[in-house]
Length: 79
Image 1: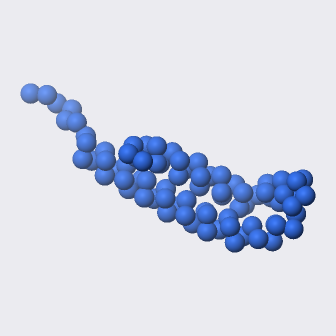
Image 2: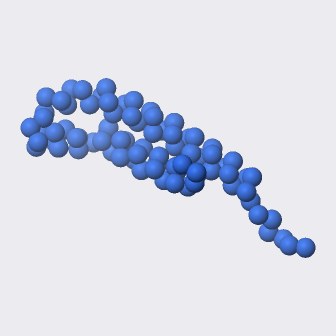
């Protein structure tokens, strides 16, 4: 992604969504409603690495945005 704001937005949404699914029983209820309640024992194997990935992606996006803002900042005074 060329725009650091887009990467930051995507990573923040992903982090919030995975964190919501990790710390609340949303997926357990949804899987039970669909009839896939047997898969709930495997959620930790998927959600925790996904949460770690999105947290690292968010940190990278923040770092990249700061780097982009520092190099492309326009001077505020014109002479």
